Length: 467
Image 1 (cartoon, rainbow, N blue to C red):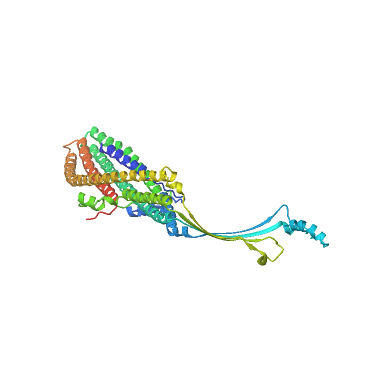
Image 2: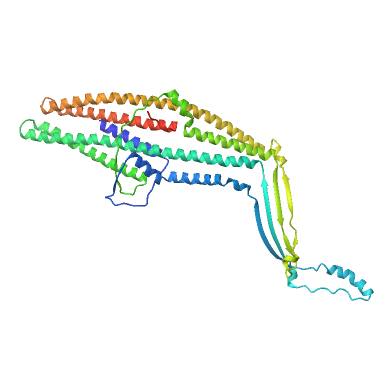
């Protein structure tokens, strides 16, 4: 039956879409069972954007890159260090004692008293040393380093935009997928109601002697056979709506009503024009191009580090006080200095050095990325053609299905009249009803396919398509 086929295909579609979603949402807040909400597709996207853990994580990554870009100039700040040290020597030697020992014999010959040895005090063991150091380093690689930080921020913006668009695409597909399931369920509920009415009418006709007992039993069995299937579909629909609410981050227990319809707006598409204008806008292509720019900057930095020297300026003020009991401002001795250093690691110039080998690896990675970019561009152009062809097929199927529904409706109406007049069997009426439901569901499926395909194409082109 079309009921079983539709149920399986729709459930598989829902599972695949949920599995493809690269995020999970959670909400600690609980709600009463009576809490309900009506959502349009735009409101569903807004809820998901507010509660997506993936989006929040990506926002943090983007903020980190933005902060690094805003303050990249801090690499030019000099390094300022301030320190103070008090040290005590284990042993103290009076520097004048050795002179006194040499002069004392001479002084005695001359009849003069010698130099008495000075008494060592605790303060003689102590020395105070202060230090203020300022250093500033510069390398030409810093210039490309600033550009690298900016490119990394731009790459982060592309990643953020891509994550945001993926989240919107997945939520919109889920929303319309649920609408499709609801429409299929509504058709089955109508069929069940028709079966109930036919069973009631058959019971009246049997009492009036218009139909045999067999016809009554057939009508009752047809109704009872449909009830369990519809109940299962209703329960499955409720569970999927609960799961959808969980993915959106709605409070647990919220009853969701979807407001909307699967009514796509047809767009006139020129494949060659789309490829010419928008093929390069694919989020994956933009991301790959930005990564290629980052690799080229890394290579430039490696070359600068090899082929240019680095400049280091340093100035230090280092007051030393030997006698801590004296006036420090008058007795300190400055051992600081100013220096200019030009350093060049000549080993990095050797072709087999680690730096040069790393540069060769970077070049190879650039070549690999360029090949990947060429492949992605070709695949994107192929995808655009495939998606445009699929949209054209869906549009043709929608137009054909509209006429088929009219025929199926007319056939069902005529069969229903014949059944009421007793000129046709219940089985014929059920076949006509199934054909009508199949035609309506086929139209809904094609509309969903067109809408889903159009969203995929807009994501590929990174633009909104309007007539």
